[in-house]
Length: 284
Image (tube, rainbow, N blue to C red):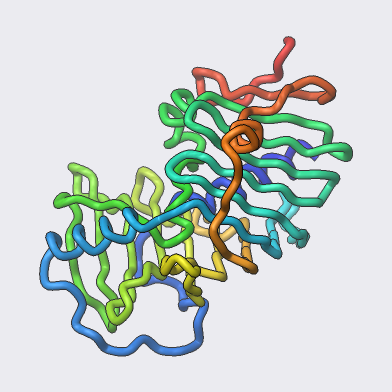
């Protein structure tokens, strides 16, 4: 059950972060129209900054499909329903019902996940620890908006065009690819985000498609799929199908309660992210 919990923790958070070859086939089966894309990185930066500026608090329900490979090589599948709430830039709340109640959240100071009653376990960590350990953990719980197709880039990225997509590439000082972003040139929606391990191999691919518009005019992908790779092989997939996407309006007092880290009391097992980037058992 501990392994299942870690898979859930990774899967829920990997959706909110963002390898590096041509992307796997898009979720949509329609080929992209051949639009020219942006003429420079400056134009790209301006377009993506405008999208970030228009982001507002969101709510949605979701159907979640999770598949992973066990240590013995067998595959396992689970599905569950969830509720999603997000308030820019740091606050996320997800509640699902599988192995008991699943709760995952972030605020400006910490992240957490609890599963009860079957696993009866609570994982959490401070933001500073998570950011220091993001290479070892392979996720950053605060990269929430990337799963909604909202990304931030600067002039250090390189722009190329490929078969109807603007392709943005970030490399490290040694020239190894760190991240790629594929943007459909005609409507300028982010379709795929690929991130790499330190050697430049596939680590995570995040696919988004079937964008829908809210009443406030912001477009959100209604299908989000995260694929995790280990030693060149895909070992976990999480797919979310969002429904009822709309503006999240809540009184300030309820907002504070919703996004405050819950108490650890009444959980049989509690793990905390340590300065050495491991989840250690609290109380030992």
